[in-house]
Amino acid sequence: MDVATAPDIHPPMEFDEAGAETRDRIVTAEEATQLAELFRLLGDPTRAQLLYALLEAGELCVYDLTETVEVSDTAVSHALRLLRTAGIVASRRAGRMIYYRLADVHVRMLLDLSREHLRHG
Image (cartoon, rainbow, N blue to C red):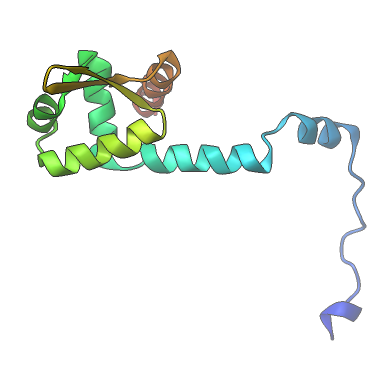
């Protein structure tokens, strides 16, 4: 039997009021894309460790992050560039040193809640 001529097993469902209200409250396709990109950035183990190091320390330079996370300075610099471009970390220069910190309280909350979720399970 052809799919086009197959009998409909389930009657057509109506999009009810709860579904319509839910549709109006969910993220837009553009927001969903941005969220997916954010979680992709946070999904890398090295970047996650760097973020938690900044969460705990408040502010660190590349050398301190390299020693803390135990990865190369090249890997740390690359990760920080991605995180800074995405607005997840911020930096400040003090002479020749650049110090990194979490960009805002929302990043801190996201990291805290993520760790709490892991420990809860």
